[in-house]
Length: 250
Image (cartoon, rainbow, N blue to C red; front, side, top):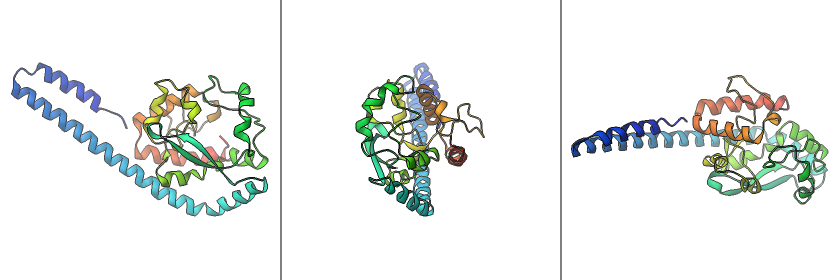
């Protein structure tokens, strides 16, 4: 959602300062209060609609995809270890939660990470990316390429910890390296998909690109762009665009 109230505030405040009489200033105060109240009602209604869509779509997805969940669970279990991987992530306003994924790595993946940090392919080192990560299991490579390892996060959506569309939830160690500007990503609930997840860099309607080519700084810019201009229509279109992004292995 764009924030026109800021410009409206500035104009009303300027008029308030110019208003000479107490009556004129009182009128300006009432106009400013009415504008802010209207915006609060609008944002509250938008949040309610977004939450309703999250719940309905999450329930539908969990029921519809249950056969696929069962198949993936059997394949992951054959690799040895638990089916699900619960990882601490940072959500709305810095609150941490346990994000669910189908396990795609060996059981001691977190312990082996420190030894691999020197091979990080992401510039800046805030996020970690390694093309041939030795911790990824054979089944894990397939489910990651198809992005189906993220499907259990519909449960996080149902619990209210995540939204379907929103900035991806970062690890606490990544947040510790954030600048003040980067922390703008924590102003909304994290999501399963977002602009850079589908590779939408230029804002084109049918744009689906390679998310792996997007740097961390660009991820932040795209997330902030989404936060400032989010809408129900945009969320629905990003959900639709996520399907070809998954099928194309983007």
